[in-house]
Image (cartoon, rainbow, N blue to C red; front, side, top):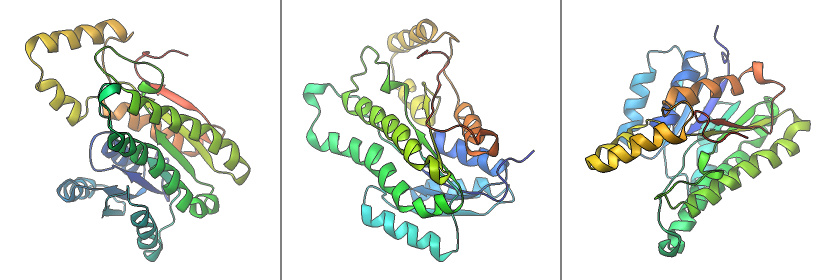
Amino acid sequence: MKQLTGKTALITGGSDGIGFAIATAFAEHGANLVILGRDEQKMMQCKKQLRQYDVDVFCITRDITDKQALTEIHKQIGQKNIQVNILVNNAGIARFIPFKDTKETLLDYHFNLNVKVPYLLTQIFLDDLIGSQGNVINISSYFSKRMLPDRPSTAYSLTKGAIESFTKALAYELGPNGVRVNSIAPGTITTNQVKRNYDQLNDEAKNRFDTMIQTIYPLQTIGVPDDIANISVFLASHQAKWITGGIFPVDGGLTPN
């Protein structure tokens, strides 16, 4: 049964990795899509692949760290008479640099894309969300709760902690308006970027990584993008109508509460 028929979802970073998996799952369940991304080639390929589903797909290629761009994106979508019912704040950056070497410019970039963009984009589309009794899904990370050896994450972790606090506070504030806000915190997911990073490791480093996965993950494996897409469909659907303010770890048991 299609759970999102008649809905329109806006997904940032929706042309690759977790974002594309969410877009595909939403399309399979009948949602029309607005995809935001920066890579024109990826966006064209994304639209081509999503054509197999009988839904509308509107792709916008912009740098969303520019507030003016967010306003213009809202105007573009409004001109097409599209009302956004579901907002997925997925786009983000993760650079694992030691604290002592993290420049202010890199800290600002993490904060702008991982925190400020979701905050402002949700604010810009607030009337749409209230008008449609819609919902927001923020993508966090296990790095908000758990750190790993050889992965210095101060900049990244603080932004994901912030997005989870934002999720809870906004859910509390918008609940009376009928808008739900939840967050998903993935563990390590086999995206193209993760695969590329793994392939660049030498044999010793690959063995250490494989051993770490067997050791720290109770299910002894990392996830796939569909693992995040599947819970996204549920949270976006009417089946989750009484769920808001939740932080949902999808991480093979890495961060038990």
